[in-house]
Image 1 (tube, rainbow, N blue to C red):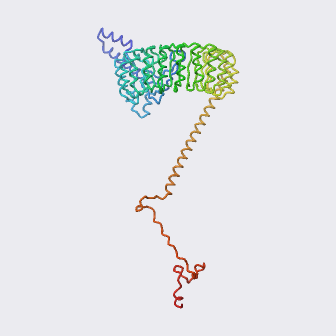
Image 2 (spheres, helix red, strand yellow):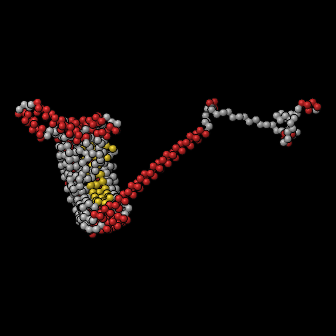
Image 3 (cartoon, rainbow, N blue to C red):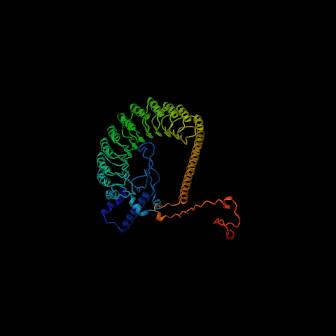
Length: 529
């Protein structure tokens, strides 16, 4: 039952004061049917895409609006959340209407049947429904006990998304008990709620026993240092913890939690994605993290955007970045590193051999720092994406063009809002496009080589099987039972008696009148004899 709008509430109050006419009944019915049709159409119009868990939720970078509580439950492929429109479900061989009913999520917590719908959806244990997406559904603490009880009896859900609601620490206590009973949950999203340090403590009890959890997103809350330390301590001291990505963005963290985060980077063998952006780290905390960054070998993606870095800290951080051997993506958007940071980044780009994507947007880098970054691009051999948008370079980019002419790995350079010469920007884009096309051709060539190798392996296997069949047919079958032997009997070899001394056969000459079979003389000769 859809929530009632303000206009419908007014019509209902007027109808209570006086009896409504037939025309009014007809108009209200048509308006309600139009509303239901529009809501159904909005539910069915889904965008196809993958949700990025590490995009910011409440700052300048827009977050793609792909999944929400008003859409159908998505068909999940492995660990990526892909949504399909209604007409695409039929192409998978399913009954579209039945799948629509099975995958329909409750739209609003104000619906009187909301809890029943959620409970039925979770308790059905339908293997096709692998995500419980109640983001932006208006959930409150009173709804969580019923949802937690249903989760404790479920064995198929892999993702629970309760982001952008009104949940507090009390609801997390109830939710933790339900998540412990569901062995299949791998991702938990509690971002943009009202969780504090106490709620983070309740959540840490789940991490102590939940060995199947891979991803945890508690960004845009107020867990502070106490809550972050409790969660990290549980992750560090739990053996065989498979957690691979952790989002602690915008939680008012300070330098007191920096040693715990560094310890997590050091001790966790599976942690590959870490987001600590939009927190209150100062120079000491960043130094601690930088020291660990130089030695870590597992971390692949790090987001420290919107954390202001001092000039001394920038030099220390870029030095560690140059020594790192695992990081592939680094987001430093809005860190205000300035020209000093651009100079230091030149040395990091010259020595780093693993970084693939670097975001230096909105860092107040001017012309001097831009020239040093161009020199780093010239010496780097692995970087593919470089974002410099929002910096005020205010000049020529001839140095960048010469660097891009020598670079053969960059396929994307973002220079929007840098106040550069438009003609030179187009030239830089042409050089980057050259690398992109070469990369596509190289990738297609690798695909062709892979297909040829697969075809060769298939032919070799077929040839081997044919050889085995020929070898089996050429061998005579041997039976272990002599009476049932299938082979032909061997011919007996008759030994011939030695020839007599007087036989002409022994001399190699046989007269025509001599019987070669009996070695006897003819009768005419014997009679005369």
